[in-house]
Length: 162
Length: 162
Picture 1 (cartoon, rainbow over the protein chains, first blue to last red):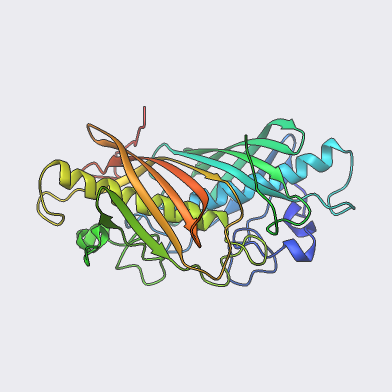
Picture 2 (picture 1 turned 90 degrees about the horizontal axis):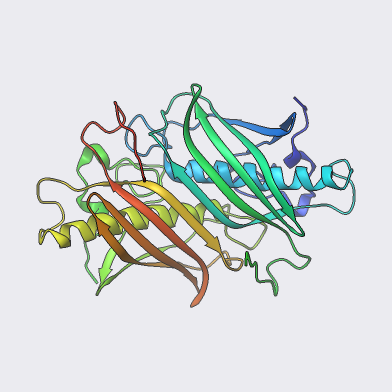
């Protein structure tokens, strides 16, 4: 497994994400690594990340899926261009759409593993499928359409997944 | 608008949700109210709930959609049974699936409004559609399949949306 996560290579001005930004002091600091053709991320929820006592909050799971998937999209886009992450121009993705299916309750008090694969790269869009495991059991699956962040993001931008 | 949110009526043992539990000291405390045939919830993100600086983290938006939708499902289920929320037996919903479409960046530093409607009640499942507004502009839409929490949730339960 690489020791540098894709999120470690994000330029400073796009490294404040609450889910995965290394410069967000309050955030989750999701970190995404290659493992062969898959990516992997691990996360241990805090005791207060509860749905009902003993189980992980679904919104947190959605956040992990979200950031691990946009990270996977960036990592895959660099690979597709045969470039190292962190080389210029920087590739950073935002979420166009997010879907999570909660298959069973996710136990709290254990490390979660999120694995992802790229289903398709299509222009500026990358479709990423992911699976969330707790103690080796699949508890949720995710699908994210990640869209390469346009220049001027947030100023006059409409993110479209159409 | 009612002054009592549906989440205010959840029994204590299912009121610890990080998104909407009144007994979770660290959580978001999402609160859902009827407004005619719609439900409404408002939330002001914290400064650190960033995607990129100036814009709201998509995982937070997913969390708001999630809890407002399961709350809406509970409220609608009481209505369908012609009962007041908080009467016995308690109706509490978990998320079977969650989908969020991010239509444009959501500005940080302003109150967000989430409106929802029930599309369908089908046995123990309620399908809820929602829309997220910032300063009157739609920034995201959501769809949640909420499933009535089974007795013994998390012990031998598999939540299925099939």
